[in-house]
Image 1 (cartoon, rainbow, N blue to C red):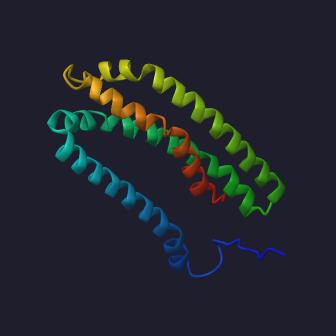
Image 2 (cartoon, rainbow, N blue to C red; image 1 turned 135 degrees about the vertical axis):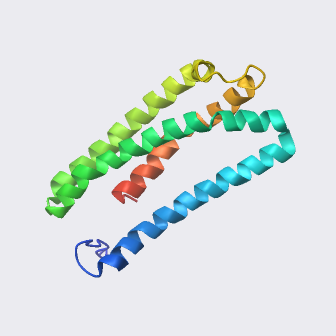
Length: 161
């Protein structure tokens, strides 16, 4: 028989509960920043100034799209948390299932749209013509990871493993 691993966030020392919840999220954010730093160092040192400028020119669009994906997943947590707090577990499971299905659909739609319109988005952002092709190559690869972003964020937000 499986042990109950549910942790009630309303019982116990609030500081301990908050730290136990937030430290893994903080570690994930720090890991992402470290990845960005190392990515910038490697690109700048090995591929040169133009490639580094291309990576830098995609920062805002990367932040916009990935932030939108994470925000959508965070929104799914609200009804799940409400049902969990009310101990309405059957209803909560339905919301989790719906969140997973909707996330998969949104991930595919967003990935498709940004992949199709990526070059136009870079042009609208007035990416310089000498680096737009490099920027397009870089951000296209990032955008193909949108489904993974949805998957990981949904796991973190809904604590579904």
